[in-house]
Length: 244
Image (cartoon, rainbow, N blue to C red; front, side, top):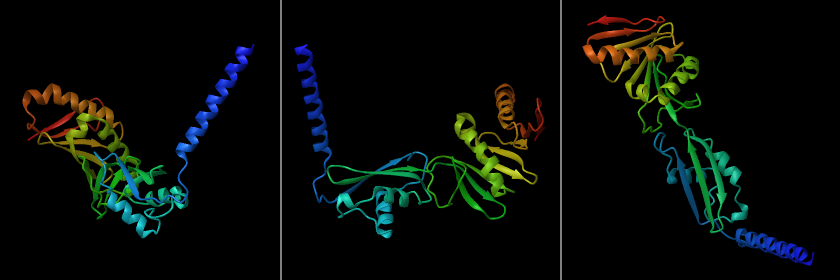
């Protein structure tokens, strides 16, 4: 019984010590000043570049730069809110370090499609279906959508199609251009082969492209990739090819 009591007391003392040690470690010296911003940028392989210089400039223009300010007066939620307003930033997370730095972790918006419509509109769509400005610096290969494109059609149908392409390694590498004809009929310009792929309406596109890929493997590999000018898979369970 005495051993149990002693063991309980020892455990309580150890727990109290650990709590005090952690508290002391995390306690920031009174009046400590922020001397630097540490920036972590996610998704640099796909998205536009957000540099430390740009982040600092944004904060300075808003009058909320943390450099030289006391850590206990820096409002991280305000910094996150202002950075998230940037057209290329999806979200921002900020926290302070015991060494006097403000760490900023930025998640960029990831473009999946470039839209250049006949009505003069020019923009990107990101992986959430929202519009990004055309000056975004995209480092990944993206398909370009052209033709008769209404923004509502782009943000709903073309967006879903673009996400499918991006998640499919074969078609992401093969499709260079998505051209929208009047009536929202769609044809694709591939990177390999001198032909067009006519899908018709953007319904059941996964099955349509599956048939095209099978045709590639069983037919074009035998007769050559430049034999046909047009491959039509608009109608179910058939492929109509137009010879050059």
